[in-house]
Length: 279
Image 1 (cartoon, rainbow, N blue to C red):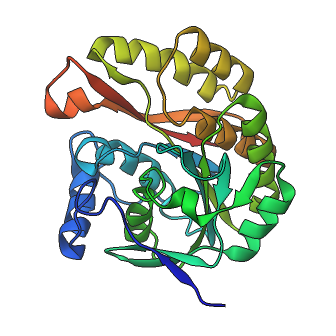
Image 2: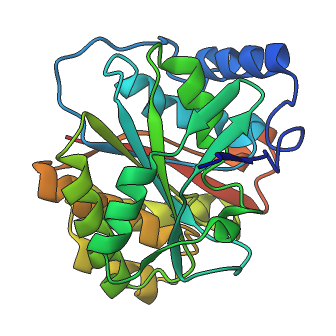
Image 3: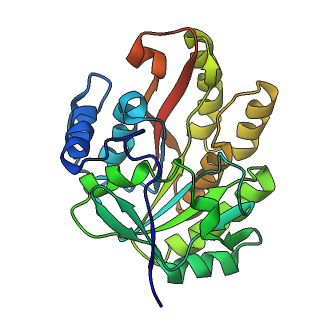
């Protein structure tokens, strides 16, 4: 069967479209004052998954690199990436089949066997390449992964239009069943508070991050709704928490939190970015 190509849709916007410029920008994010500084952290610690932001690299890249550098020595065979559907197109929950994702750093193959298996395991996950055709939440993770991992890896992309608790539980359970079959890393793609004053964003996100670190999904949704925290990928965070907990993780660890205001200096209306690992 012919493998289709999912062309990059935010290359030249969220990250450079030139390979050399892109590699330099990722390296600049690593050594940035808000970045992790060290490219690879060699550790025997088992990290089941991470939360990573998905804004333009200029703003969220240094924080995202904390997540990726924490796992860069693990060289997973399979990476399951789950994020929100910002455009409201396609299925409520969708993965992909018979396709590769292209970036300026090359192509990454979707593992169709596991995509189809995860769709069959889940009540909600459908095979629908169109659902992924416009969104950036998964795309921006891939060049970082290509830059940091020396071995070839494949992906299972999952995009969420529906992000309620029932869906997150189903998706998280399905992810964990697949993750047990290979050396797997799970990535939950989400930004945190959107378009609030900087100090308020910090308070909102601190409240939401607390139950994430405790891996308390019910409390996470309670805080999300009661405080009206505008984290766009809340279902992706919850699905990742559930999957990692199923696999043996007992806690989350906050690696970095910043806002776009910390980067740009404009503190009036910011977006929050968190890097979290589950161990």
